[in-house]
Length: 493
Image 1 (cartoon, rainbow, N blue to C red):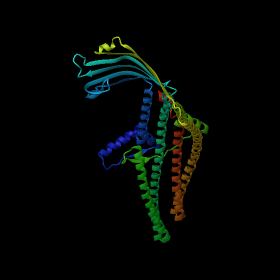
Image 2: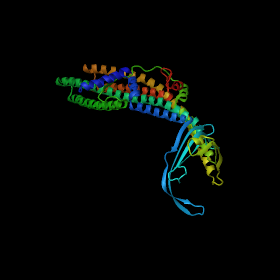
Image 3: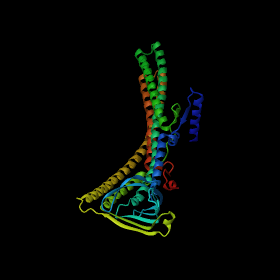
Image 4: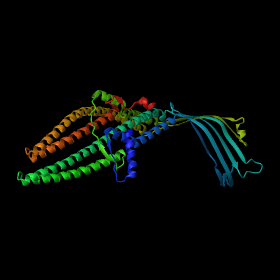
């Protein structure tokens, strides 16, 4: 990993001094994946999403902690002519120049078990009458030295109770989704790696084919000059040379296209020259289907999603039930006082008590509550049935991917052997052609088979490694090293 960054830094420094020089760096599949996970735009987006979900969880936790709040109005000045109703019912217009200020400091605590709220408060009010009659005080004070309030809904929906069940699942999902996103990056960059590698191999094949075709053309011209071959064969070889040049041009274009896609995704300098090294070894391990399914349910976020969706459906039913009628209990007990000086409101204050029970019950709602409850319960059933089907699909997906993975491993061995045999056959055919024992047509067939088997081998490598990282993403388990990719206890620490 350090080697990769060092080479990248050296390259960027060198381009500053040698504008015409192009650095070429070799990367293995593991190197490219490590680089993509550390600096690619996709990895940075995943990190940002992880951070956003973390702060959402912290916000949820803060709902259960006490909050110290300061509220008030400073100032509330009023200057106008106000209509004042007299005892006989007439109206007098009086000039008013007043100011009212109030401050309240309260410690508020949500009650998660009941959904209520309790607070301890202290408040002060100041009233100024700037046109008070002579001899009357201009300033008056009132306040509540201490007050305890309780607000408690009865038989209502309690969001704090359900949040305590659902929000931790959402946060745990997000942490597992981050690991899944990083594995998805591995899978995506491995596809681009082999796209580039196929283009690299195709360019190498096209270059060799052009070189061989030009050498064959020299041989055919020599034979034509001494009369041992016909002009149509010579023209056939000339046509092959032209086709080889076209193949080389297409291979270069495809190479540049795939190179740009890979560099853009990983976050590499576009002027950096890349040489990709195919994986030399195939990991030797087997995957048990039942074990893979068990790891998938244990580690994947989908398993938590199923549980969360059921809880959310239950929450919707509870919310519909809580909307049938409303009963709220308000209670307050403390002390208050009024005085002409601020200090006096704290001397021998009077008892302040308040209790009220408000309710709102529908007498005739034309089936509104019944419809609301029935809709919530029907949705809960739908969620349960949908989750049951998703669980079946989830198991089938893991089962299919495991079987496909084992098949791809066998396919690599076959395509690798076919590549070696086809390459050897072409070399033999080429030597026999030089000796005049093989026709140009047979040599062309051998060349096509060589190229096809070489590409087929690279494609089989691509399918295997893509499936390899797909299995890691599906189970969040590294079967090669026998390690969990997500450890819940370690994440909590």
